[in-house]
Image (tube, rainbow, N blue to C red; front, side, top):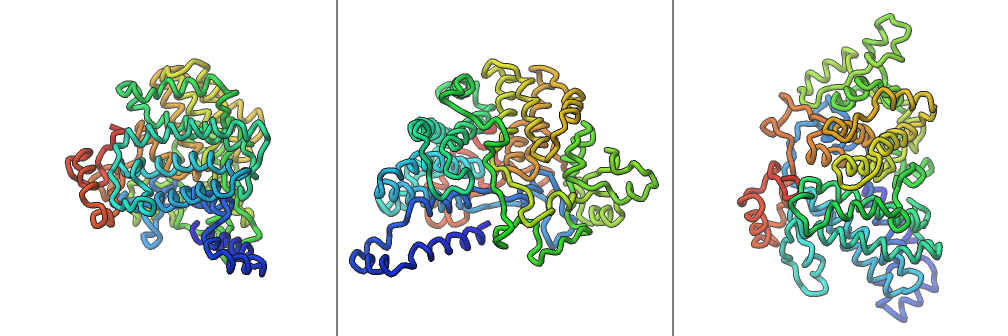
Length: 502
């Protein structure tokens, strides 16, 4: 993704700085060279906030397995990660500065900056736990290069407030039908951005379900209920037309779909990637029509002699995440595992849009909130709409097919079993979408049950966090160690439980 960012932005900046008149202006005012249009920064933020499909994250989500060690694994042997979110937060800060410098109509970027601040701070705290927030990004302005670590609860408090303010700030722009430039997601449509802000607000609130009862000062349930009850004030992403998604293109090779080969030759017998059993087992047990779109029947089913093999759910099989790669490879060679449906995923260089936050998710979040008693409403309706939006995303539009699936998998009510249904279908809808959200939902709820086996390199545990960046031990050692002591009795490993998921 970063290579795509550089190629696009480089081209933009070259165009922006190519005229002789601008060169003369810079000679008269050298400080102007430091000024960057807010829309250029905004475009970069969009690119850097996007999560691509078919990455290591998708193996950690147990959507797929790799049977060749050379290309990667699914052993959960991660340890540390970096503070990439802070690079983007500095860009958000710069966008604010430039928007204030430019003034109207660029002030809409200030509202969007609040969204991005919440987005990236949440992204960081979900990975690590306590993080710098209140004193972060003050190196240039206050020479504070050793910010304190805010408790995770406080990070969530401030982020929720930012999202509330972003919604309020966007309202007059939406009423005025104002647009912003540099937006390849929504074409500058701030009404859709407002829906995204509020859907993210719900995502963050539901992610705190374990703390909803013992943290009354955050008003988790109250905020959730207020948003759901007032669609005029808090519009939401409830249909696929409003999905926040990255659409790849065919004209620029660097922006082709991630799986698209650079030489344009699709190898339809590439055996190293197989669908994951955790995902596939749900599809086959529920007779899910999406399986016929996303996957191919196994070669062994094809060779069985049954002329109807391609339409039978038993013909589809995923590889276990916990299985040794040597075993997975043997199974793949023997034709016992399903590969991806190349004709669907790679029908063109643009592939399939990568949803970052979609209608299916918002509907399932509301269904979960109703199931938990956070708000009133018909959980079954939102459950069914979440499924419907996801199925339609895959091009399945037949009312008969959708109705048959909903009937077979009817919501059983506001019980633990009903909650598991919602969470399981939400997991299915996340396939190759929304980055780590499937893993984060599993970490919070335990649904679906993740596979653990001999390939697991983390003492038969699914990790619950990432260790802090190693560089922090050099540049901010005192504050980091205080945060570690506060959270994990000083230990910094991938199995600690952060405040939000304890």
